Amino acid sequence: MRIKECIDKQFSEIEIHVCNQEYNQQVKDLINDINSMVNSVVHGTDSRGDKCVLELHNVFRFYAEGQKVMAQGITELYRVSEKLYELESQLDKRQFIRISKSEIVNIRKIKKLDISHTGTIKVALMDGTETYTSRRNVSKLKAVLGIGQRGGKR
Image 1 (cartoon, helix red, strand yellow):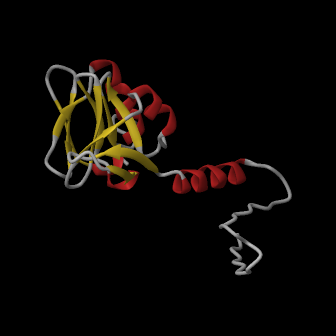
Image 2: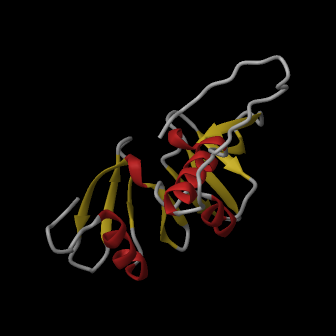
């Protein structure tokens, strides 16, 4: 793969071109990765009521609290206008996973997992937050993280 940059005054905004002799899985994956990077923000409102742009790599989780959807960032909570099901369809499946009816977590912010006796998984995030998967989402989380498969954990 070659990467070429072109700096010219004719461009008023950044353009990204993906060129190949055929449309194949590698091209599709690259386009998806670029889209994920470019569209990796969500708009939220902080505790003072100021509108903010949240970079997804800084979000630990999205969760429902009453009728609100909250985003837990590194230092603060933000209210987001999207519903959880809307976020779930927009977010990169390789970075975020729905663990319950009321919560989506950033896979890259998981510190450790504890499989409990009740059949759920306790998820400890890097900021110290602890949450639980619902029973219906345990197998999905295990599959994404490669737990319980031949060859062990990824």
